[in-house]
Image 1 (cartoon, rainbow, N blue to C red):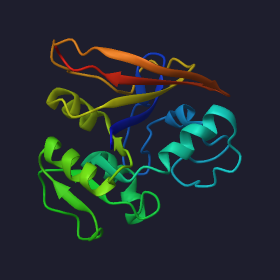
Image 2: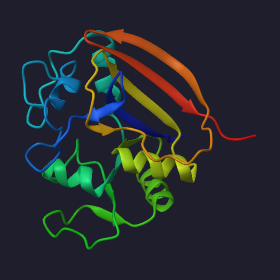
Image 3: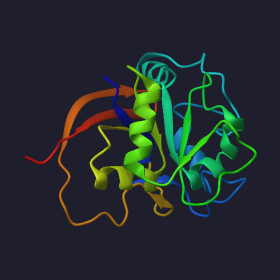
Length: 198
């Protein structure tokens, strides 16, 4: 059965990008440090060759590349320049947005409700997982109870400021169950199931 999974590189102090995130600086100042486990000595916004990966890092990226659909927030989508209209292997992309669709990406589906976006993506993915991108999208999905798992790629660095993964969450406790932990060069991969309230 398809699951919705957030895949996110994060610093130990909870940041997913450095300060000053903007077009052309999508990971913020020095934010590429969070992706060195994946793309050493390269620009994370441009490099697509993953042949250098091995061990746990390779397993994670192999899993990412077999997801069957993508749900992403509009800001993240635009900062990534829409991945040129193809995140990977032509999978359907669902952009969470209340604004008009961007005509540059005619094959992308814009959806205003996170629960509807997740359902559409699961239907499109069939028995494959749905890759979730973006901090705000993850927060909305958690609040709506439609995010199944978090896969956090914890990078051993303190950034100090930038874009936090979880900001302004409601005071409700969201319980997580650790499913898997694996060390790779420069990163610890942590996989959590979002536990539903009893």
